[in-house]
Image (cartoon, rainbow, N blue to C red; front, top):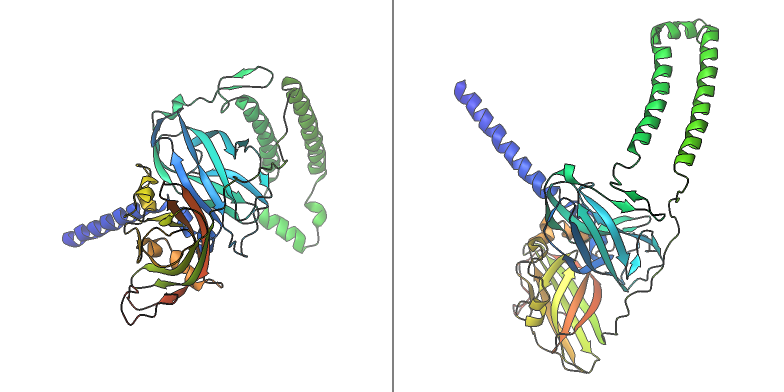
Length: 429
């Protein structure tokens, strides 16, 4: 019996440890529960940076980057007619100081963003709650929810008791800590209403409620349910509450005469003025190799520009596939970029070269990584449209970047073939 208890405790310990690890991994990646068409064909984040990965309570961190509204916007998602620049963090562990979209203050929502265009965002926050927190940018779309960008763990050190949020108002009043400003008045007002509510509940609870009232209803004596005393107390309480509301409203209006209502207007900003990349892409075929966990694409690239270009990166659903044999692509990856968003195998191209001006070049692209499965991206195979989207980053010989968004229908393949065998039908080659 003793041995059985020991084994039982071991099993409980192992299971507890396993689920604790799963929770640690999972709590920071709620964005991976979103449907693939959300993540691969809506808001495509790139050039995301975090100014630091460790701050003290009260210190600032800046997150900025760009996003493109994919031109193959899915019908299941509302158009970005109204969006809000947001952050995705595990609760109020940071306090936002300011935010911008294309340099315009993003205190309010923005309207009429253009599909197929690029925008730049910037957010500054200060550490509030100590811990190791996953910090993402996010773009909230009215009617569809928030689309979350890449995330990085940021460590906040110190004590929460040291957190202060000083603010100077427009009329010059200095508030030492906005988090506790006028908190006494809030508590007093809520306590007053709570006392009224408790009194009203006790007035009815002190008498037998259920059985006697049920018996009175069965006997047709509804007149016994409410007495004259109940009516008098109800009238007195109603008048008292009304007087308290009017009094407290006037008192607070006199104490805080200058107020600013919540801003509901919507801002507008033009997209980033990017030059025409002068590259045309046609996706002949796209498929997903189920056993090999690989997305394969046959593309035809026409270089209409006057400089040579070469493919350096494919990005989809915050997962970056880098052409590791191309220095310009490697130089575009910052040193502390989160490894969870970097595909281990990189991007494979069968005929990797610079494409001359005016040349039409056919390429076979392979993007292999277990994250297609672990991040539920293969659910695009069961979508009604079965499509996948991505950003392609081309570079010229001087390292200048050209960005294109592509999309294609995608088919599942259940044979482990890398597309290079002689018997493999390579459409578009």
